[in-house]
Image 1 (cartoon, rainbow, N blue to C red):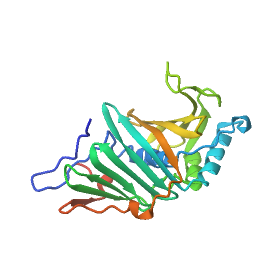
Image 2 (tube, rainbow, N blue to C red):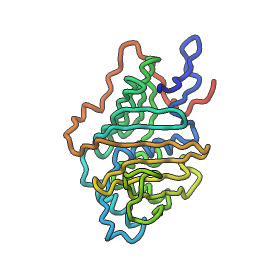
Image 3 (cartoon, one colour):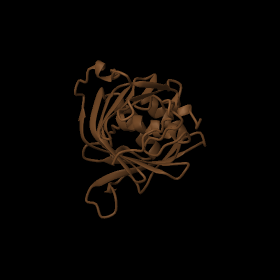
Image 4 (spheres, rainbow, N blue to C red):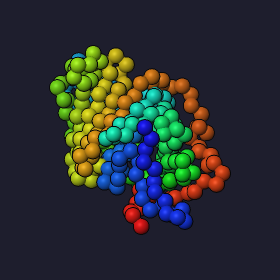
Length: 249
């Protein structure tokens, strides 16, 4: 299923933007989730974890040992479904190449967020260097997450079904925001005890929208070249800056 693309006026001026159901109220939360997804690596050691806070300390320690991450990605928001592959290089590079919607690209390089919409030949850019949670896919970023959210186990550190009736077992961790400045009011992390990787992230926004990220086929430390995170703009593409700050003109 394709997303609803941005609408353009007759003269090509961007006057609204929607991407799989997020708006200005959830931009920080969605961005945090994407970057957490890219760096979703954990070391369980359940016998050593006494509290959810200690659990996140284990996550932070594991982050420092990961160089690159590749996984198949599914994003669901309301009735919209998106599929692609996520690539990350620590500490700052993230790229998502989508198969649905076809050829769409999301790229983060530590300073800016870029989204390429092939149907509109549009490139959307947003400076994010000073955004909270911008470096969440690092050990330092995990400490930001711990400051902004209160962690708790959903049912304890023991594995439970990822959803009712499923045979897939995960450890569930709930993060509840400390302040109203965060786009997600709550984040649920589902962690596979066998692979010790985050299997699913589910976030609820202040508009009561649920956004879910599922990961499969994960590969670590595959040697992604840094040039892979440089996007070459197709000819005649239209560039729009600071799109997350735009309202309806």
